[in-house]
Image 1 (tube, rainbow, N blue to C red):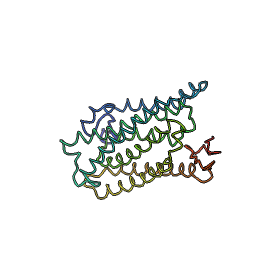
Image 2: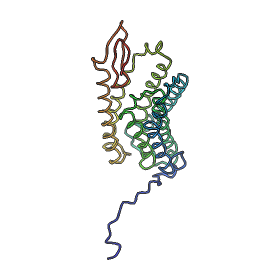
Image 3: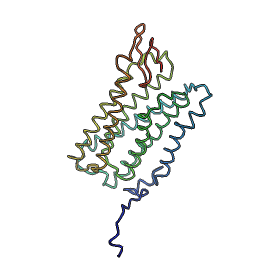
Length: 284
């Protein structure tokens, strides 16, 4: 029997980018570095970090948290405005495939890479949880969200880059401006945290964000002249739907009436589903 009768397997080179320009960006040449980051991240936050902190008091890290969250606010704002400019220029449902225009491609790829870089930096959220012994906040939702966003954005940029990501980038970065502002102010201590009232509205904003992303991808596949591939659009829509369910469950458990009690008129909102409020103090 000659070779023509043999089964042929999918030949997919994980090191080959759709556009050669992508390989010059940091961490983008091969999947090795990003997979190593993911492995070290999960090993540290699930095993090594908690083991090292077992006999240690939780670190306060007040200055570090204020600086970190401040940097995230600035980065998120910068990314939101870059994505917004691209949306204004190209439109929500582009009639021209700008990524195929060589003079515009480099800027588009770099903006998507900035979004990927932001996802890598956000892994530090979990590292701070470990160092502060906030183990109850390291949930499946938290780990899945951070892991899939980093790896998924890398794969998206490497193999299927599309300008439809600018809508996600704008919404997500805008949410993060408010979210990291909240965390930065909360890090200043209870004398400031008691005046912060918008935590629950951030979660609502996230839920609205997920619905908008799903709708946008459906419309982009059907009506854009430069749509994402149907496979990528299906994955993103399904994964975003999964996020929606997870965050909705978190919202219901965190902000239900049974978990919100008042003492002397001071509201208390739990940070995770494992906390509830007693006399305006969060307890596990």
